[in-house]
Image (cartoon, rainbow, N blue to C red; front, top):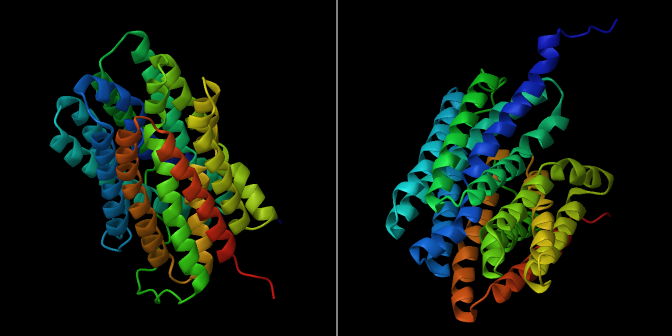
Length: 391
């Protein structure tokens, strides 16, 4: 006889999935990526160069790398919820703090710390959410969790639209981002009312296998980090350089976030029907088209196409890339996460630095974007090469 679970038990996985969505909306969609729509106002208001803008972005990505590697350890076992909520609180405070300063050094420090907070939230809230989903056998809700990044981008874009209509100063974007993040923190605290269940094994994991396929997917993941981050950082600045309105700038970022929300759910179906490597490689190629389109197609269609294709792929690559790496080392998931995050982190740290130099050299974003598109094509080819071959 089938036993029907009580309603609270059936709702628990959905509640935790929504808590993860809210957490990633705050830490990633706002904490990491709200810099993109606010950046053009900062560059104009402060006379900031593209190199400075790229340096600030790289500081945030360096912080993300550090936070992810620290969070991958077992030091917070049993305290995951407290660390996750503290990281969300830090993300909210650091967003608001960006509006208090005008100097490069404070910006670098704040964005570095914000990157650490984003990564710690990603690591610990994901461990909480996934454990509850696994217990309920509802791993299909992982896509809802990862959709939070797109939701945060979309919500922050709507905020920027409102601020643009009242001609608010760029600092208002940071202050209100802090307010939104605080509201998200409260929601997460209510929905995620306990830590992970059946905690991950804290024992020592085996070494990573010396498999050429693993090395290739790690390298491909780093190339993806370089290729996506240039457009993810400068897309709205590209729109501003084209002389568009602030409302249209926010609209471009809005469609980016809206495309990201259902992206993993849709691409996961493709991965299930073919394989992870094919889906990952194809998403890199689709993203390369969007990155090139953002600067090669004139007028408003270019950035819109770029935003849609960027949103439809970058979270997909993040998730599928990790899945591909774990297939090579299923008994060393923490080590795989750490090494792939390191590769990805290096790519996205170098990307804005190189882009800033190219923009100052050329006076536009064309060369930097085309370089990023080419790197994404190389990432796709490397992932295809990494796929295990049938005997």
